[in-house]
Amino acid sequence: MVFDRVNKIVYATPSPRTNEELLRTWCANNGFKLVCFETESHTGEAIYHTDVLMYVGTDIIGICLDVIKPEHRDFVKEKVNANHKVVELTSDQIQSFCGNAIEAKNEKNELFLIISSTAYNALNKDQIDSLLTSYKEIIYSDIPTIEKYGGGSARCMLTELF
Image 1 (cartoon, rainbow, N blue to C red):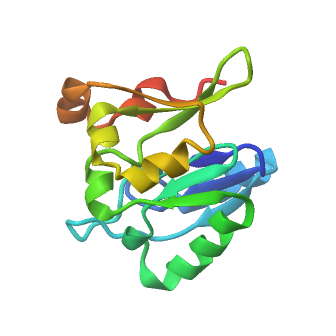
Image 2 (spheres, helix red, strand yellow):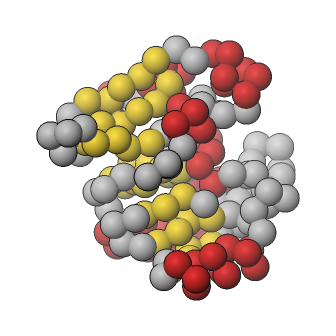
């Protein structure tokens, strides 16, 4: 589940690790709208975690639309564009962990995007410039052991414990 806490929306793709019925129950019990859509990875399988392909910030979303099945793509585009600026990621970029990012705020209410060095180096200049219109800074660090053996990246290390 990827949360848009500002607009009370959950984005999720069903997979062996994400059950659609439980998503619907959680959203109903917590007052969130569900945007549920199917994906297909480079292996032909469903993407197992939604945070592999997208992140949601206060006013910007990074998302790989290419891995969303065509019959769901326009629906998801409409939903992400309704409340946010969108930075489109490529399939190659999500394999470099660009979707596994998380927004953080400091005590001055300044927003930052936290990603890995692998992800940062996979972004192009236009994407970085677009992100910097919403973030004071993009914070990144080398985390190759987590990315190689842990099955995730920066967002997975920090998660949303708030």
